[in-house]
Amino acid sequence: MDCGTKKSITGRKNTPQWKCGLFVCIEKYTFAHIFLTPHKTMNNEIPAYLYDKSNITRLILLTAVFALLFINIFQPFGSRGWYPDISDFKYFFFSSLIILTGMLVVVVSRLIMLAYGRNHAITYLQYSIWVLAEIVSMSLFYSLFSKFIPKEGASRDFLDIFHKSTVNTSLVLLLPYSILWLYFSWRDKNNILEKMAQEEPVVEIPKKNLIAFPDEKGELRISIMLENLLYVDSADNYATIHYLNKSKLSHFLIRNSLKWMEENLTKDSPLVRCHRSYVVNLDKVKVLRKTKDGIYLELDAVNTPDIPVSKTYYERVMTKFSQYSV
Image 1 (cartoon, one colour):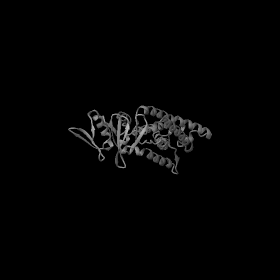
Image 2 (cartoon, rainbow, N blue to C red; image 1 turned 60 degrees about the horizontal axis):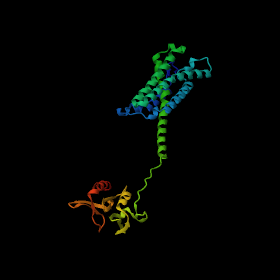
Image 3 (cartoon, rainbow, N blue to C red; image 1 turned 90 degrees about the horizontal axis):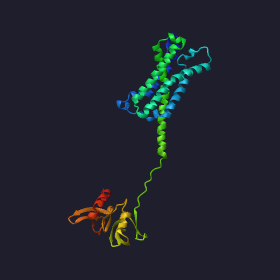
């Protein structure tokens, strides 16, 4: 966009200072962190929200509204002189038409970015070049318009028009781009926080530490805390449960088989069948000993016998022992 000019007392044309100063601030704020960051950062992918379809629509609309307000309020092109004999309403109509025509550059650019971003990652370097191309394209459009459409444009130097158009176009694009970048970033982080807040914490259900021993009819005979259970031995159809009761060794006889206990009590617990006559609590094993007579488990309780491990059950004992040993 062509910078509006005013004559000073000396008759020289000067670019309004507030515009150039604001342009410099916006330019530094938006792109300084990109061009001054290390090469590694330039090759990083930009956030996906910058080329999200809905966000691109918001960017186009806000940029168009800002451009309309900018040209009609500040008249940066000396554009009021294009149509000196028309009413303010007609001036607003014609200037808006020109601005919206120029905004087609942004529309086409962002549609290409949307299509490209679906299949490719866009880096900070690529995004910077993309925005720079938008500024140059819009500046060229407004420079050509300012040079060849208004009657007084023929006497003006094209390079001077293009330079001033670049300054104003950068201001018109970079200001809404910066605002929306901050907004999209805030919105993205806010959505993440809301999702985290809505997710119900996973409550881990503690494993039952109370082991129930029913008889062969299914009637509960005794329940023992896992930390107190030592081992179970079996003879015929009876099983004897050995456990600690107030730190003293106790036992309880029930009519049930070790096969039932193996099938129903050893899953997801340190209980394992180690012999045709024994089920042992691995949490209570303090020593696994191999001798010429076989493999034996020493329990962490006084006056308890060593529990044998038969060859039939050796593999499953070792597998489970590795899970429950430190």
